[in-house]
Length: 256
Image (cartoon, rainbow, N blue to C red; front, side, top):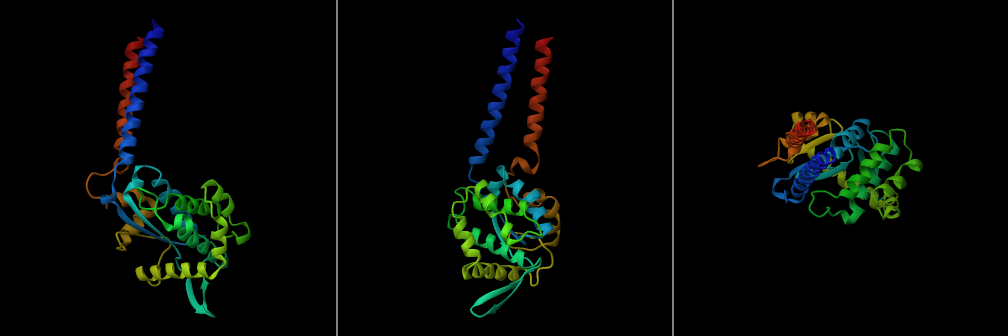
């Protein structure tokens, strides 16, 4: 008799979990392009605050349904300055020459991974975002070009053209790509006052930038028009909790 009760309860759990999964998958595959918020991140490859924001705020938020609501532009330049000399740009980076190399690697990656195209159904390229997040996570202000974690991060994120990206960083192409990012940075604020700087819908607002540093999800959600994803209000977690409590109450009744 007890085994029959157990099978009954186990069946309820399976049905509930499957239903929650189907709902989540349905929401993930809906087209939210009309609700997407333009997000531009102005940062530096070896800046501690940039690394913290990218790895603890930005990238984690892109792993769920919220990723469907973002048109993301990454600009790894920050407080760098540039000067055109002898047919090529020369850069002075906030955290030294090693950061210039990191900025160029990321500039080339953004341009060359999948030809700079966005992942289908998203407002950014998932591979390049993962690759850059890995670089930000595994490097620091003391990282030098010879041990920059490009190989490890390329393997983890299935980047197939790493040699081309690294050659780009040491070529005039890398300098030109970084110079273009410098022009974009100057257009938003010249000179850039803080790194990172996060801009929503092409308007730099100090309050948004400040909030995004510690709660990017909240800052982003404030810009989403229409029905907001569950991540904005935590309803999915609440529903899950009520569902679990409901099943738990049935288990207690059945087993007693």
